[in-house]
Image (cartoon, rainbow over all chains, first blue to last red; front, side, top):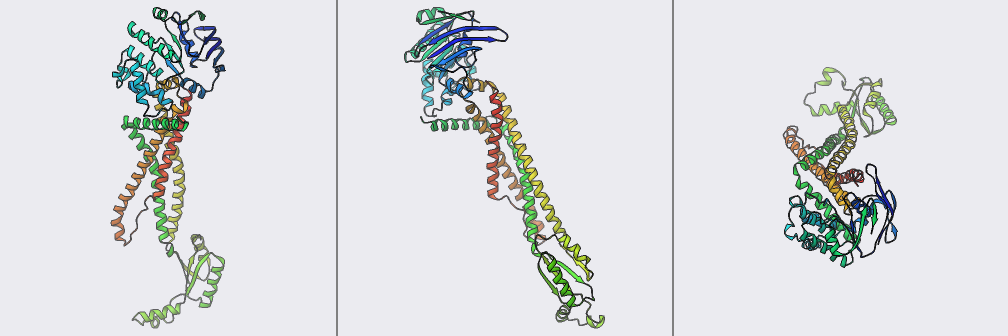
Length: 217
Length: 301
């Protein structure tokens, strides 16, 4: 479904972060991306989400080259993805409900369907009672879960998550991982960057290890 | 879901978001709206001034006439010749000669005094030619030509100041167009400025919604609606201000015109024009806001 071919990324001030990455994610597949901090996990996810453009190499989605899409097509592509960001990226002046409803609004769901779907997503991350809270009043872990709910609410085809359990206690972490597994079960292609090795090992899925800008399996 | 429903849903949401934005920050919304309203009200007031002067001059159009008092020694036959010449050479609606003998006769019948001819000896009155020029005639020029005729003693055109008023009205009309243009431009600039400021204060919000798949058009839409709302409320408020002002002036004018035995009123804003201005306000708002938003949002990645 997603194929990276010889992808490199160089930043002017930090040099080459990714070097000649080849990677394939099959439809309905699930993989974990591990590696020390600064190894380029976030950059790799951003390249797949078309947030960063690679310095060299090509990116394919269903065998279509998507390395250089127009602004409009980038938006279209991204609206079918679920993205979980390390720094949550929530709208702080709006409540939890409105934050989670955003992808639905962008995709033009009617205001009748939205509450049902938002509550279903809230239920999955165990935050039903926080619907009306402003995101700024939530703890780090709660904000992270709002970010996850927002990423899954519109049933994306691909889910990319950058350290989704970084701020969560072990019990909640394994709940969230179970959530991702459930999603993957119904066919959502999933790539998760994480350094929670114990958890990843227990799950037993494909692990891609990034080190010095290269992948070792 | 069809594409159209998607599109309608998304527009509905943007419209309600922009309305919410206005309610959320009523003071700054009111200030901007007032600024826009004043900018709209100025050319509208000039329009009312213009059409009031226009109305006043057209009321007096029927009275436009030039009176020629001929020299005493000019005979009726000569007077007729002069009149013929004048009507051939100039744009004239109507010309007539008032025979001094007829006038004297009438004067004798109507007055009880029969002293006049006896004391003076002969008819002291001159022949008079009354000219009603066509509307488009340059009265000033015509009057000047008539003054040069050797048989003419005196040319009288009492309404010359009215011609000046008419010319003045033309100037007002020209001023009105220029001021309208400038102030429409001002309204656009006000809205562009507000939208630019709105966008930069919501930069991170736009970044986030772009990140989760919002198109430029989607990100731009609430600002477009907000601009439209500003323009619409501003021009609506301007219509109210101008209509209320005209009403207040007429109220004061009533005492004055009563003294002059007239029912003159300054013009009010025609309904259709008011409607056009309100719609125009909304359109200017939408166009200005999309211009500003287009340019700003493209910079956000």
